[in-house]
Image (cartoon, rainbow, N blue to C red; front, side):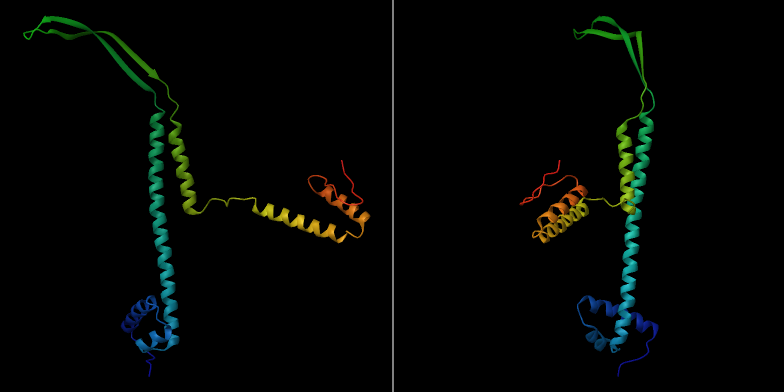
Length: 211
């Protein structure tokens, strides 16, 4: 006879065993027979496990999102720092020295040394910042919104195309139904044409071209 009560230790053991058998494709009846508990209890325990698995998966997804967001935040911070540095004025100093001829050295080569500075050139360049770093910041913002699911859904023309196709089908049905009444057919066609982007000529004995 199947047991009706389990200790907390036995219950934990059963849940662990149930998970292993469930992943191996065992049926609830087979698992119940192996664990010596009712199939109803197996169904209840399985729901508990599935709830835990779902919560664990959500936790892992949230953790993964958190790591990616931290990477994006750090990268954006570096982009901002680099952009701020690129805004600072650039200053360069070039010195020109006289050359002092020392004559021929002991190896028979002409020797020389640097003398005093004869000319000093200072260049200053005002910079407004490298836009490439701002592009990096923009990418970080877009990436963060994508991770958090904040982007608005991209609209396509599918719905518009479908509605337009549906309207053309309805229009064709109406004009076909009025084939036995040429004058009425032309009048209806004219009215429908006024609702569309442009008039359409209707072929038949009573064709009327609308300017």
